[in-house]
Image (tube, rainbow, N blue to C red; front, top):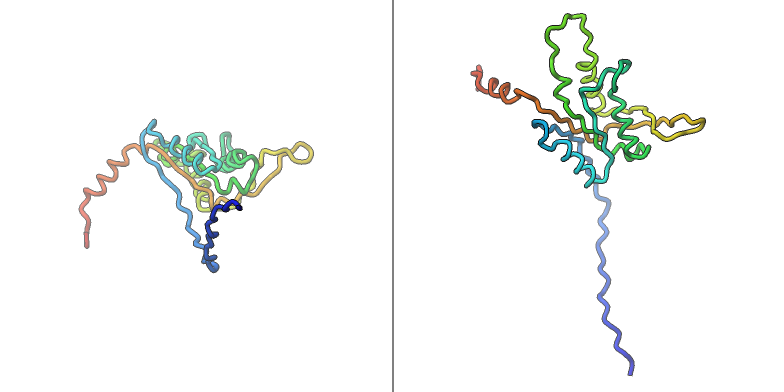
Length: 186
């Protein structure tokens, strides 16, 4: 008498779909508004950990225009490349967290026309260029030939930018605008 072999389930076959069109979603960035200590940074770090992507944290109050003492906008991308272990392709799928972005938008009152705002409008324009998507040359953090760092190109088009800030008095500005009587069809 031969032992009875266990029944095997028939293999499961899935229909291989014909080439489906690739859906390309436009990049959307995020603005987190809230007072200090509510968890904006923690939320973004947790998101990066869950998605297994590199993250670069940036304090916008320390940023200046290129050529001035301080951190320039492109150094944020360099931090992201370093967080990705020097891998530019991995960095291009990462997250840049811009903390206190509301501080660079604040007007500097009481200054003459000759006042040079190296941490305000110039930084805003440079950040806008990155957020909209551009190619940036940055040092990878890895040593190349002759102990110099390799330079890599990073396309910021697919990097998720998360801007955050307290945006103090924003509620009052919105309320004031809503209280105004509109003319015409309002």
